[in-house]
Amino acid sequence: MTASAPLVMEIVEAAPRRRYWSQAEKEQLVAETCEPGVSVSLIARRRGVDPSLLFRWRRQMLTPAEPTPIFAPVEMADTTSALPLTPPTPCGASMIEIELAGGRRLRVGRDVDAEALRRVISVLERS
Image (cartoon, rainbow, N blue to C red; front, side):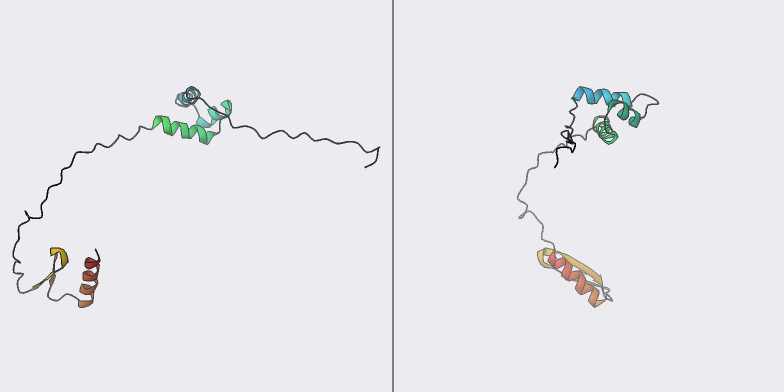
């Protein structure tokens, strides 16, 4: 660097800080957007708010909250001994009844495809 060269200095500003909106300001902005004939984007530009943020505030404030589910008390009773034991009912000549684990029964026609039946039984045994 020589003595005759001009000295150049660049001033770099810090990154802009995120703006904080109070709840009252948010409510005021949303109320402005609810007036007839008003554009949400126009209000956002006038007030220096990103339009997507203003749309989000509108959704949050104008959409009714889902009601809290109400649960009913449930009392479990021991029903293992109360289940009636019914004998298998005759299926008739054209039906086949297959008793699976857990007392489940599968009734199919006599002309059922054997491969399809195998697939169904394997699915039922896994569940």
